[in-house]
Image 1: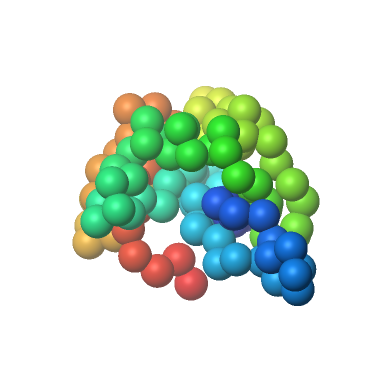
Image 2: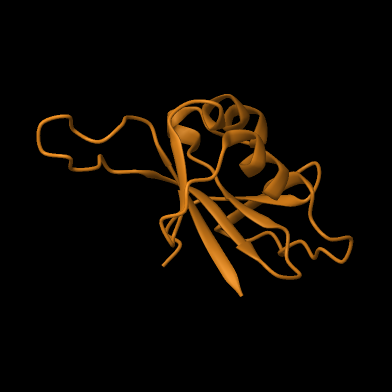
Length: 108
């Protein structure tokens, strides 16, 4: 089972209620390191840059459940001991200094 997580920097539009486009945080899949979506061209290169952002805005999983920032951080860093890192390739640019991999590109 896997779950995608999204960061909404702004609350929904106060006039129409439409949510702004979220930024994909990453993917949690059983047995694998958290696939942390990084955006090097925007200065988000690792968990350190994401950690600041996780404490602002709203985080939701793909099922619409709101996840508090500290809980999201814990999801990324407190993985089961049998975590497997993905091999480095054109998407996985670096294994994190813990239970995450830094991944660029499309997650479809």
